[in-house]
Image 1 (cartoon, rainbow, N blue to C red):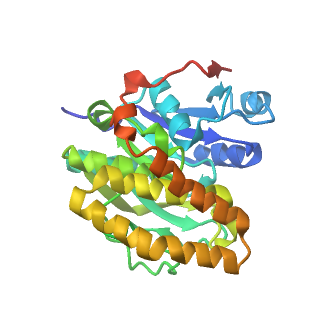
Image 2 (image 1 turned 90 degrees about the vertical axis):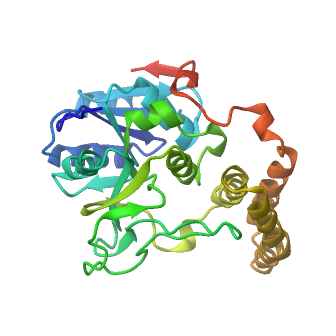
Length: 320
């Protein structure tokens, strides 16, 4: 398929009780030099209706409200369903654009290599703008289920300024071709949040596409560098979805080794740590994550392995 060098891009972001942060992100988009795009905001049933504020300040934005919280996966899937773009830029509302040529740089790898399916930029911490959060992903260990972001917490001295292929796109900022969505499908809704972009990336690679890290541009991400931002909700989804990711993306031998590692090391270590720190809410969340995977062991028989764009429901969505 021959691609135009000025394709229509759909910028998709989610708002959930963060109107001021979302507005700051939308304001930062005004720096972009690329002009052939639309902006879609999916409001995940925020307690305060953001409609009037966004309509007044950003009249060109397409705003949709969900009557329930669809999570990161469900909200972005709705955005993908409603989007008109040849490419989809899925980006967190707690990021801000710094490079005016961000879109052009993220599109370039698709023009250079037709097998590229996803592209993520370099990401730095907003509160520490010279410190890297993401410069690519290391591959998840098939036996421990652990991985890491390349360059995380390193001062940016240009050591990761070489663009190239990486193992996973970053969910905070990922340009995705419509071809990927048509052939691979969208996010698997069961993840809700955490590990969803890693799973989508793994499935994309299985379909013959490549993931690319674009070092020429970066975004600032308002995510804390400290672990203080970790909540019982994140404890639950990180652990629940780590196991689900391994179930979906490893073979029987690898998964058996992972389960042995989980039972011998991970579960005892987490129980002892949470008890020692008297983090009983985290302990309950962790045990709930384990229980979910036990009670949903035959999840593949309950839901399709892939979710197609046609399967995304707009039943809970209200255009504003």
